[in-house]
Every structure is written in structure tokens, then in C-alpha cells.
Length: 168
Image 1 (cartoon, one colour):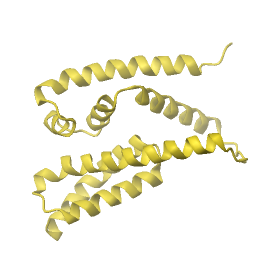
Image 2 (cartoon, rainbow, N blue to C red; image 1 turned 180 degrees about the vertical axis):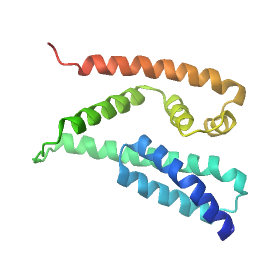
Image 3 (tube, helix red, strand yellow; image 1 turned 60 degrees about the vertical axis):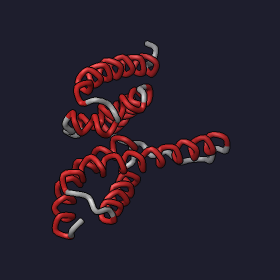
Image 4 (cartoon, rainbow, N blue to C red; image 1 turned 180 degrees about the horizontal axis):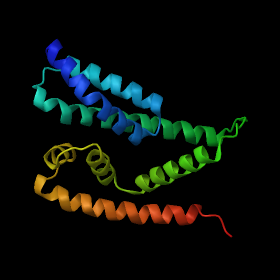
């Protein structure tokens, strides 16, 4: 990709890709690393500009999946070998927001990988044709698949909320 094209693509895609990866991983630092790696890989490939967006989102998704897998392995190791942590208190609003984010993340984890990817890509404003290409389905199927994924997410969110509700 030419330098001028790359700079334009970078300016155009960076905010959306950053949000997508941050939502996917739940970790701003990891998201920044993944986005940087994704753009480095884009720079190394000679792609037409119109193919850059779906390509870089697929690359970022794969890098994020790898990062999530590593994080899960690390979490399992920490659970098996706990270390003492000092907890700092945060304001109530931050705590509630963190809890809502965690509920959303848990609900997303209950979805299939394809459903989760379609919902996150839809949230980032992808067209159905781009989503279809990224997940490997017909573009005419994406609307129905997204609607089903939203229903599944809603049910999962409700179930996660019920299991996390404190008894009164």
C-alpha cells in the first residue's frame, strides 16, 4: 500500500478499529497493541484501498482472539496460584459502570464466536456485505443472523444479570 493511501486508511479506520478491538478484548492496552500490529500488517500487504477495512478487521479479530486465549490461560494460572492483591476503592458510578460492562462482556461470551463477531462489527458500522465476508456467510443472510444474535444477546444479558443479582 502506498504511503499516502496508508495514511488515509489509517486516519479513516483507526477510531473504529480501536473501539472494536477494545470491546472485543475489554483491555485498552491490549487493544492498542492489537490495532498497532494490525496496521503494521496492513502496511506490509499490497491491498487495494477498498479491501483494507474488512481485511484489517479480520486480522485484528484474529489477533484479539489470540490475546483473549492467552489472557484466559493466564487467568487460569492465577486462579490456580493466587497472589495477594491490594484493592483500591472507586466511586460508586465507576463501580456500576464496570459491573455493566462486565455483564455485557459475560453475555457476549455466551454467544457463539460468529454471533459475537457479527454484533461487534455491526456496532462499528460495518455494512452487511462486509460482515458477510468477514464471517463467511451470504450477505443476504446477515440481517436475519444479526437479528437472531441480538435476541441471543438479550437473553444472555438477562440470564447473566439474574445470576449476578444479589438476594434481597
